[in-house]
Length: 347
Image 1 (spheres, rainbow, N blue to C red):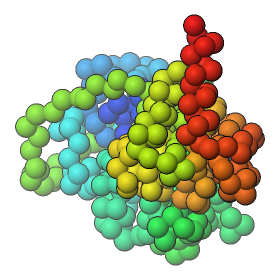
Image 2: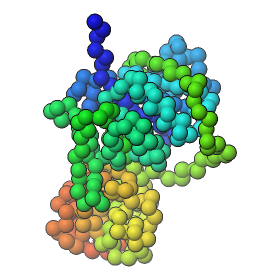
Image 3: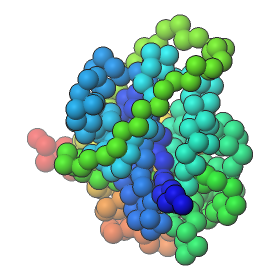
Image 4: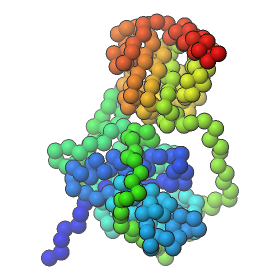
């Protein structure tokens, strides 16, 4: 009688720009924590084409030190499923979803985690539909309950509530997780893992969409979710002109600017600065909160901040109660005074 197959938690690896986009490594770290609670192995699933510079002959000699494969293992993967083929050099949704469907049906993972990036939000629901299972999108928390089920925490009802969702019957249990939700574990070059080569199926249908050309948009500043200092502003700043002061303050602090949903909807700033349910998850060393009441869709997206400084006229605002330092003052006036003080120190 053959031994029962070990359960597995899969992390789909989006490595197109992993030097800046760390969500795959963050998910591997969280998967390690979850795996210990259900006695499962952590597996990374990689589709792409890296033969020339990433996965050459060294793979058979020492997979741990081989590009994306090595990064996955060094950051927590016990096993890597690798499909490396020129046809996968550019992401094509139909092809990637079909490959994931076939591999998951064959290997039967317990859990599949995917980053809630633009790519992941397109890819994950299509995979879930093919596997006839549920999917919780934009999770801000993942735990294992007493029954061994994945508890997926996500904002719901427009961000006014936080829901805890489980998938008791269908498998795999699937979730997408916002970048920055979990910290990655340090790179450990001593880790060893198994690499499973998965050949490209010969019966893949022809792609209906063809990539004509692509170019990378230069990243001029630190991404908001990676910033060590985040200066967040809400409606309490008073106006678009006053909100603009936050950009000056962030520049002085070598930080990035975040915003609440009402501010973005009022067109005081663009959607890229949104911290909340439909925006970014941040985990800065220092979070400045100016004129923010503290709605749950916002606070749930920044509860990983190490130190919070809140400025608000209302001492009973939720954000003031959550802060390490709460300052009762007009947010715009205090921001102006802080900018002036910093400039005097810099001079």
